[in-house]
Each structure stands twice: as structure tokens, then as C-alpha cells.
Length: 115
Length: 111
Image 1: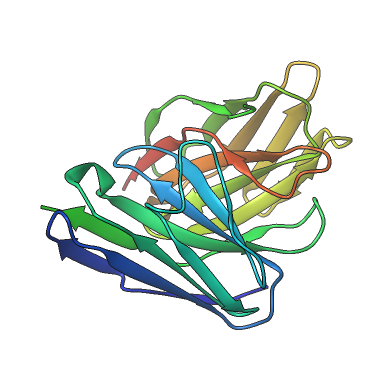
Image 2 (image 1 turned 45 degrees about the horizontal axis):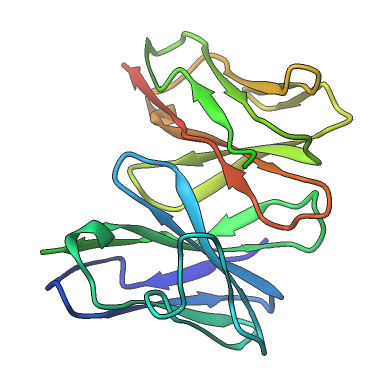
């Protein structure tokens, strides 16, 4: 199992600004994932953060908008840049065990409102 | 995309009743997982069923998987008000490490 600490838990930001979300895991993990959950919607994978290499972004997400850092095996950050009201969502970090038949663990999420 | 589709989108029942949620997906999978989310917070893993399994139990949860129909169901028996949450299915394909989530079912259990 893994315990994930994610912060901030919520924030209200002005459009045009940026917010950095932090994710700390209590154990070393190879892969960390960042998801976006728009209001009333399901989770959409933004990117996979690998330690020591650039993140792998899913279709529709770009590094300039969502830069990710992964300096070590227990920590990652996601920045939401040049925010607009459309970025208002819950952002979640997640880790998963190696192999396909393993469960994922999630942070408590960051509820972002852009005004 | 092998995103799952949950059915129903919302379900309202009384305490003590059973709740059944369904999930369909589009492509072959290695396993299917169910997660629970309380009030827009982090997700909690409930149960994983592999593609070669047909049924799995965990406490009050029963999950079935029909790979020929590309569908799964989650049954919560003797529901409680504390079961009120959103429930998501998620799939992972062979050779993949990422989960693809369905749209979710919002369950409301009234006392």
C-alpha cells in the first residue's frame, strides 16, 4: 500500500496565474500519475511522471500548460499554468504498483477554482 | 479508447437495499477494477477482477465480469448511508500500466 499526501487541498486562483500542486508518497515508486476530474465528470489522465525522465503526456495535454517535475522516487509536482476558468477541476495524483494486476492509490485531490 | 461506461449514472436507494452498478468497456482488458470516491476526494480501491475470473467477493461487495459482453457489475448488498459515494470502474489492458476510468455512478443511500 501507499499513503499519498497531496497539497494544497483546495485553492481559488485568479485567471492568468499558475498553481503548483505537490504530491508526496511514503514509499519509493517508479511511476506516478496525474489526473484531472472536471466537475461531475470522470478522471482523465494528464500524464505519467517517471523519475529521471520527462513526463509522458496524454493526448490533449501539453507540457507548457501542465509542467511536471519528478525529482525523486517519492515526490512529484504538477503546475497548472496560465489558468483560465476552464481549468477549474479536481487534480489527483496517483501511484500504482508494478505489474498490471495491482491497485492504484490516490491522494486526496486538489480542488482548483479559477476566477 | 477503452473507457468504461457506467450505468446508471445515478442511483438512489434506501438503507438495507442492494445497489447494482454496471460498467461496459470497449477493448480487451487484463483486469477491471472498481473504485469509490467520496465527495470529490481521492479514490479508494474496492476490488480487482482479472480477465480470467468471472466473479469475486469482498465483504458486502460482489463483482462479476463478462468478457464476451465486455461488461462488469458491482453489487453492494445491505447498503448503508455510509456507502453514499461515486463509484468508478477502471480498466487496464495487457501491456499497459495506466488505468482508464469510466464515467461513474453516483450512489445515494438514504437512512
